[in-house]
Image (tube, rainbow, N blue to C red; front, side):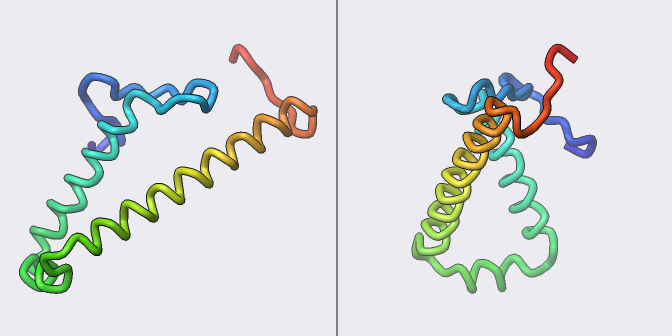
Length: 96
């Protein structure tokens, strides 16, 4: 991941027309989560972080809720972008 590329099946994500999840998105999210967790575990503060988070799923649920809201907004933004392109408000070049 140092060069910004994930290896593995589906890593070459193609968002398509916005109506489907990119095939590599789950792989990328898993790799990013692993890298983040690994970085924190090596920071020397893993016990403090574990104590702060506790044993409930409150943090997990908060992150999941945020991620869902963020994804919903990204889909709305993408739809607005496509609409603006279709209306000719934003010039695009295809087949490049």
